[in-house]
Length: 146
Image (cartoon, rainbow, N blue to C red; front, top):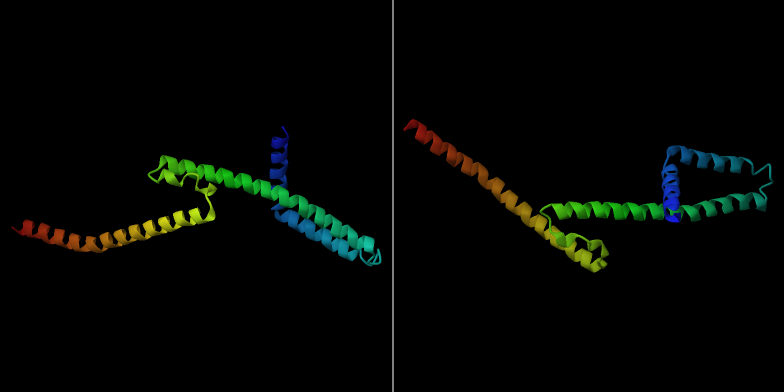
């Protein structure tokens, strides 16, 4: 129960926090606060209001945004795992996000080496195809003339 409520609130707050209107409203609050400084004689209470308000908002937003990022990361990982599972990719890659940094780096290097090898094979095929086509055209022309 609490988890779903928190998720709904976190999603709404994170969505609202990323809107341009929210940024403009925050800027407006800071401007109003700054303009009100002379009215309140730049008192300690006046300074404490903005310091306390921004600290509380920042503290709460850290947890809300982290929550939404964690869920987004898990959801994206699940989608990628499903794509790997149903494709010709290696199923060994499913779950690598749970490995240590060194183990993930090892996988990354293996992928990079495989990609370079595949690029080399494709380049060799591309280089040999024009020569094969010319040879095929010559053979076809020779047969047509005979």
